[in-house]
Image: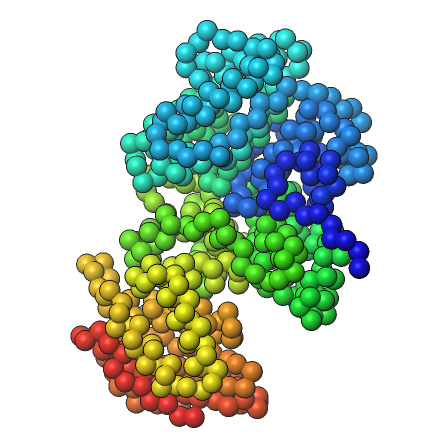
Length: 520
C-alpha cells in the first residue's frame, strides 16, 4: 500500500504547500486570466473556501516566484515573469472589540511593509502613512504596487452587535481603502476579499472602481473544488475512502456529493465542493461533519431566534434578487443575506425572468450541522442533551417503539419555552417538530413540509415507513383520518415496507402534545 499524500488541511500559504509537495488543486489558469483582464477586484466567498490561499497564490505570483509554479498551468501562460512590491493586508488572527484594535492591526502591517521596502513617513494617521508608502515604494522600485486584502470585513462582522464601535471601524476602513482611489496611478493590481460586502455608508462608496466578481461565471471556481477537480486531483484519496467505507468508487463519489457539494456562485450553477470538508474527509477516511469544527455561528443563532425566523423556509427555498443578496445595507439586518454570505445557504436555482436566486442549504453536512446547533438554542437545552434526544428518537423509530417515540416527543414539547410577544405557541411547536424530524434525516430519509400550522412528516427506514400528521387544537383522530382520506401512503404502496400512520394533536392552550393515534 502506497503512503498517503500530504493534504493541505487548514493551510493558507501557497509557498509552503508547493515547497513541501502538498496536494494542490491548480487554480493558476483562472488566476492568470483574472490578472490579465482587470486591475481592481472584490470577491466574496464563505469561510473555509480557500480565499486566503488564493490571496497567498496571488502574492507569490506578483513577487515573481516562478519556481513555485513549475508544472502548473500558469507556467505555460506567463511569458514575462516580473516582481512587484506586494502589500498584503490580512485582518485575520486578531479579535476586534474597538477601533484601536483595528488601528493596531493596520499599524503592524504598515510597519512590516516599511521594514521590507525601506519606507518611512512622518504622518500620524494610518491612512496618510499608507498613502506615503504607496507613493514612496512605487517611486523607489520603479514598479507599481500590488495590494492584497484578506478578510477585510472581519473587524466589521465582529463588532456588529456594538453599533458605535462598528461605525468607527467602518469609518476607519472607508478612509483607509479610500487611499487606493487617490493612488490609482501607482497601483498594478488590487484584490480584496471577505465574506460580506458592506454597501451604502461603507468602504466601497469611496473605492467605487472595484470590479465585484462575486457572481461572475468566470470566477465561480476560483475558490472551492469542482467535480472535475475532485475526480482528477484526488483519485488515490477517493479510492482509499471508498475502500475504508466498503463502497464502490461510484457510491463514494455519490456520498461526497450529497454531503459536501452543492455550492453555487453564479447563474451557471457550477457545482462547487467545500474544500475544507473534502480534505478532512480524505484525511480521516470518514464521512464526518467538519463545517463547524472551529466554532459555532453564535451570532447567527441569536439573530434567528430573536427575529422569530421560520427556519424551515431554508429547506423549501428563499427567493432573493441578486443586488439585494450581495450588498449588505448598514441600515438594517438581513439574516438571509448573512446566511448566504457565510455559506449556510447557497444558490440552488436562477429565475431568469425575474433575475432572482432561490437559496437553500448547500448539502446535508451544513443542513444537519446548522440545525443541530440551532436545536439547543431554540429548545433551551445543551448540545449534549439535544444530541442524545435525536439518537433516542432514532432508536425508538427503528425498533417500532411508537409510544416511546411519541412520549419522548411530548416531553420535549412540554419543555419548550413557549410564546413571546413575537411568537405563538403553535409556531414554537412547528419549529420543535421540524428540528427533530429534519435531524432524524441524518439516519433515515426524513421529509417535512410546513404550511400555516400543519406539519406532515414522512420518515423512511429500510423496513418501515412512518407517515405523521400533526394537528393544532384538533383531535388525533382527525389527524389520522387526514392521512387515510388524502391517501398519503399511496406513493409508498409499491414497496414491501411496513407503513405506519400516526396522527397527533397539539393543544395551544395547555401547550402540550395531548394525544396520538396510529394504524400499523
